[in-house]
Image (cartoon, rainbow, N blue to C red; front, side, top):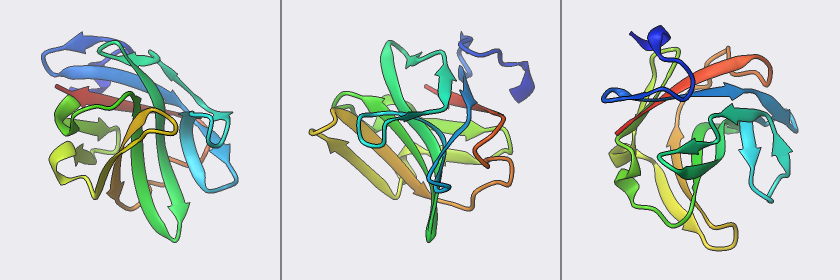
Length: 131
């Protein structure tokens, strides 16, 4: 079912996002456009339900983490979960960190995880936001 999603397609099962990976400092793998690190990688589409996507990336900095950054001061349940192609599902209710950065005007969901080998700063990843 996952592979049937085309980038940007929204159905009752979710919205598919394609992440073309970039690499920042051999630590951040995925996409960010936030003013904090500059820009690396890209996403298509660039919005989820009309909300700008500022970052979707894995972090390899001692503790492996997965982060999603959406523009604005948003509710934790803006989406229910994010599923990546290797099958990992990241539920918003169980995020290890949920916070708003007033300085950069984006909301951050962060989960402790193990980085899949495919998230290495190159290639393309798929993610599905479930409403």
